[in-house]
Amino acid sequence: MHNENQFQATDSPAELAPAEATAAKSLSEEAAASRRDPALAAVNISKSIGSRLILDNVSVSLARGELKVVIGPSGAGKSTFLQCINGLIPPDTGQVFLEGQSLNMRNKHELRLFRQQVGMIFQDFNLFDHLTALDNVAIALRKVRGMSRQDSEARAMSELERVGLANRARLYPAELSGGQTQRVAFARALAMDPKVLLLDEPTSALDPELVGEVLEVIRYLAKGGMTMLMATHQMDFARALAHEILFMEHGRVIESGSPAELLAAGSGTRTLDFCSRLDLEL
Amino acid sequence: MEIDFLLERILPALNRGVWVTIQLIIPSMLLGFAGGVVLGALRAFGPRWLRRIGDAYTTVIRGVPLIIQLFILYNALPKLGIYLDGFAAAVLGFIMCSAAYHSEYIRGALLSIRQGQLKAAQALGFDKTSMLVSIVIPQALRRALPGCGNEFIYLIKYSSLAYMTTCVDLTSEAMKLAAYTYRFTEIFLVCGVYYLILTSLAAWALNRLEKLAYIPGFGKAK
Ligand SMILES: Nc1ncnc2c1ncn2[C@@H]1O[C@H](COP(=O)(O)OP(=O)(O)OP(=O)(O)O)[C@@H](O)[C@H]1O
Ligand SMILES: [Mg+2]
Image 1: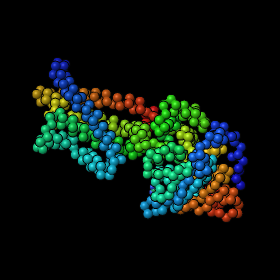
Image 2: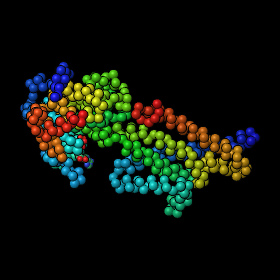
Image 3: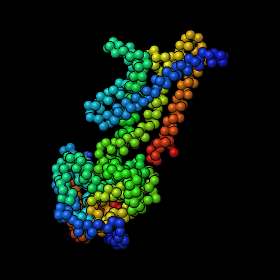
Image 4: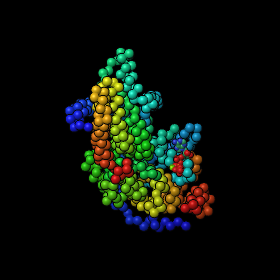
């Protein structure tokens, strides 16, 4: 039913090869401990808006290099969950850990340091409209990381090259296609050297013919060992690359497991049912 | 009209007046705009009580004719022991009025910035101040520029109400000379041309500024 091969044919991305093998030797004990911890964990996140419970004790844990996919109907709480992890929406209860370190969201400084290490990709791209592609990538390096203009631009250029947009560096968001805009957003997030990426339906706002180029970037990151948590409706993609699928409905994770388990023909899971209806719509 | 009357009576009087008008306009523009930015920012993002006060201020200023406001500043404040000379009363009135109008444009521009961009900045680790300085303000100013530009041009024209406070500006000079010579038509025609030159200069400068600040996706200029 699904064609997995198209996702496996890509060459291995050299630039993103995890530095883990070489770094492993020089690990201090503390780092060794953090290595055993999940890269990112969110535990029992709950959130109410008004009197409505939007997230009900949702948890996820991502080992290094893992790609987990969150699926579920509109209004399930996927976006809210992702934004609770980096505090864009403050959760009512629950805890977030980055490499075993608990995050205190009330401490603004700590929260900003956390956000620098956890990149986010949005459904509607959210590039800064008044800045060129290059400056969109460079600005956080300057304003958040304190890099010089020259260094930040050099780094931004190499990130744009990585997503194949070096020749668009001087264009403004209004002059880019949706797919290009989203790829600049990836360059912007990756320039911060994030340990984890949160992706909220990164291809949902794209015309069908532009989805491929963005999935290509995600695939390339996955193969390079980037840790990612992604809300998506791209089931072929999830089936081929996800280590785990979380199926959310009404603010809860109601099923989770490997794509093979949840999507096996005849497994009778809610996930399978949801996906087959999704396929009919498409 | 005889050329002598133009050269010897009208032009010297109006030149004196236009100089006063320029002195009225420049501080009113600068401080009115600065006040409008602060007021607009407070009305957009301030705590609720400040927003209320800002909204009420703007409603009153926009709802009462400027001529009445100037009258109150010049004639009623002394009853409270506050004495302003005609020039100061006029400038103060213009600043208060401009600030209210600018604040409308600034507030609208600030609120029009897509929430998503603010989320993106926060997700990258921006603090509030650098987000405001690097993302919000550069976009808001571009969005507000056409409206604020219009307000600068209106200011040049409504500065003629300074005659209310016995400040002898361009219009007052024209009125004085006309009352003395009864040659209303020539005098006010020339006076109108002076204002037209001032507003055209301002429009030209604003146009240049808009072109300089142009970014694809903002404003209309191509
Ligand atoms: N600011 C808000 N105020 C009130 N309700 C909200 C707010 N934000 C989200 N919600 C509600 O929370 C629920 C979850 O929304 P969320 O955007 O997280 O869903 P989602 O799974 O991302 O859906 P979609 O697939 O449409 O993006 C929805 O029912 C939504 O109406
Ligand atoms: Mg969503």
